[in-house]
Image: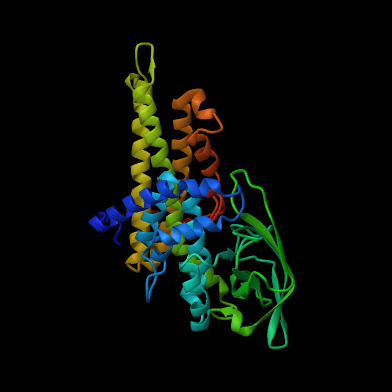
Length: 375
């Protein structure tokens, strides 16, 4: 896509966005019934029954990045728990779909798409977050296979996932060139883990590998090229993190407008005060800008613009997550003390919005300026 090219959703795209929003609303009770911070398999099953998980795994191909963004945006408007559960089904399984063997795909993709199996994307370590090329988990050669020793941290769906895409160092080469991706079932001997309690409760945990044995049939892609497997998946999913943020920001703006219109102070609605109306306008403009950047990055992926895709995806995620933080904070301010009640939806969004500014490329981290398309 050329810089500044126009972007417009099709009628089908708009209907998908509306369908995802409605599905999130209907799934909210299932989400709320789950134990906080633990894997909600009933929610994943319900997402599959609603037809949304299957949309991520179309027959004979990959989901469009634009479609993925619209599903995540719509769900985020009404249920952040449903949004995250769906996104993790995709993120965990896409290395298998994109780079796995026919046997890998046959074994796992139908089960994931039906909501019967839960995957996880195990890249992050305690000492390697945004600097993902410098992993320390070691896969030492052992006869016809390898043995993995080390740990992973802050892995969504861990330690309860059924299968993990694990990235480990198989060679002495520094950086990305010595990393290999492996497909490892959750019940593998030597693999243990524990849940981590987060600021906003999510199924996130740590994994410990104590000589976990794998054979070469469990390699995803090629030995020593696992970082390419990871980046191929992240280039697809990173714009949709921005879509998740946009959906949350849209929900916060709706609440702020409703409250500012209905709440009266000093003889007039809050929206009648210039300071409040200007704040609402600023929130709306920022959301529009972030939304367009997200859609443009998704369209670049769908059109095969590989040259600028990584930078556009990173920029879209950056602006969208920062915008969501600003908008949700402003919405709380407009609500006053009501927005501080622990049970208020804005309080939930206030906790939820913090994590997307960190995972899949942290805001304020060492971003290569050469990746940003407008520099």
